[in-house]
Length: 85
Image (tube, rainbow, N blue to C red; front, side, top):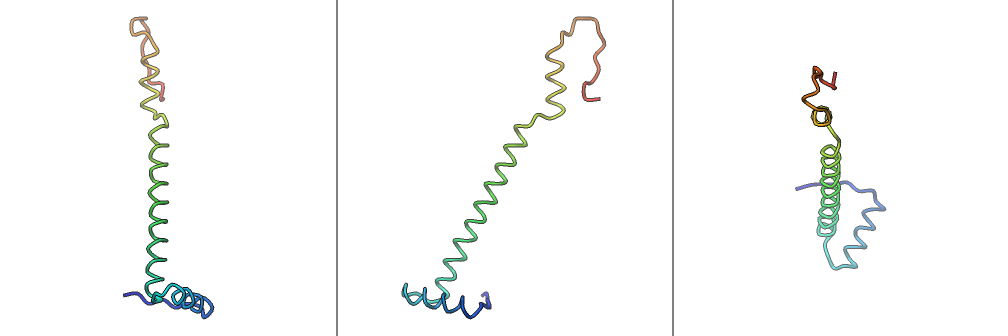
């Protein structure tokens, strides 16, 4: 159960929409809330996915270290240092 106070103008609009559609005000509000929450949830999930993909695509310090190691010859006689430092 949820109680919501509306401005008189919005409540009048709601009543008009409900009457025109042959529904109760509660049915119109349930539909509107369901659609809005679904849209917010979809947007939130899309943003989470976008950030996750962006983070996965960004090279980490470990990636740069191993790429540097792969670029060097292991038999050239020089001591290796960590390029992250």
